[in-house]
Length: 257
Image 1 (tube, rainbow, N blue to C red):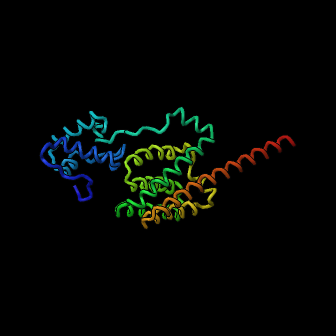
Image 2 (spheres, helix red, strand yellow):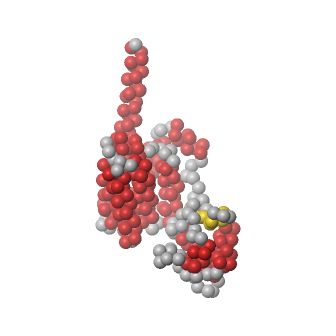
Image 3 (spheres, helix red, strand yellow):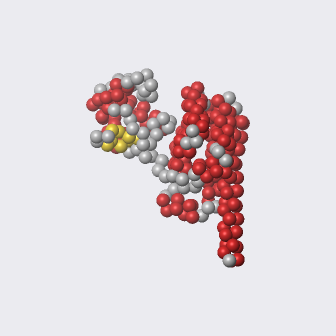
């Protein structure tokens, strides 16, 4: 396997247990995230420096612990570990009661600011390069007016910031929260683009977050995250007010006919 493999060769004291410990640690650290497919048995055995029988033994232990799913003919995948932040019934309830959306934004504002502050203090060079790469993707999507690519890059950026916080609890908890955004339960980025005009403000806000983290400025990163979430909240409040006005105007018109 190439030098890009995140796995390290293990010692010879207890090969299967050493493999288990390394993969467990990578799961805890948020390096191996749920749903990710592990390299092929041959590649993984080579990267870890163990025999394939020892690797199979380790994978069996991990599967018995509920940490991986071995799908015959498909490969080995990290199991779903965090679950959903809310049950389908509660998601539907939230969707019907719009005021809950602002509780969600309030929660995200604090967590995003916390993540940005930590990332500015802790981000490694690799973290910073990843953030810059994603900003590059956002710039490309903006230039090409590709809303789907823009939304995907948006989610990737927020997740990368959380990863750069190096706080494993935050990494796993926010993965579940971002899943709600990905499902479009509370809002979609397309609406924000209409409030923004072209998405130019959103792009500038994300650049400021990344610039603050790369510069290693926790206060600036915290403020950038809060400004971004404040923009999201203000945009949706204005949008809701406009929809309410249009609804009232339509009803008045019907009564006057």
